Image (cartoon, rainbow, N blue to C red; front, side):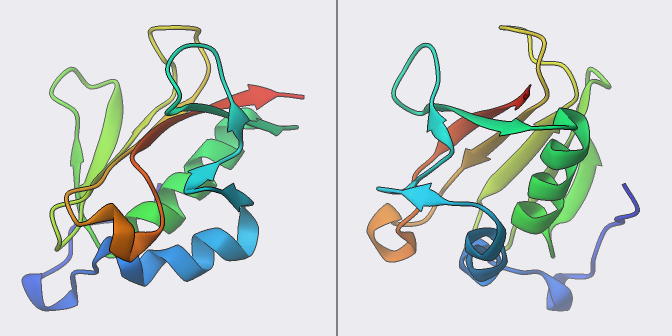
Length: 123
């Protein structure tokens, strides 16, 4: 994806990445996209090229983090300075779509964004 690890002095917090996310993706009550199947934090974003869109979302959300390949080799995670973890998997185990998960460690009231699992679905 063209992103490597960063030194500790260049790390971002999730709050640093929110403006670029909100500039490209609609957010309603702290959630991106529309409600998906399953729990309330499961979301869908529809796109012509779901993989490309999921990668773009991941790059914006995980910008300035320390990147690592998942132990099982099926995705990438970005750990941000505030402890937030953004993960990307090309194929989700639940429905086979590309998925990005946002696991927030900071107070959600400060960020206005909630932890969520976003499936990117072909239009």
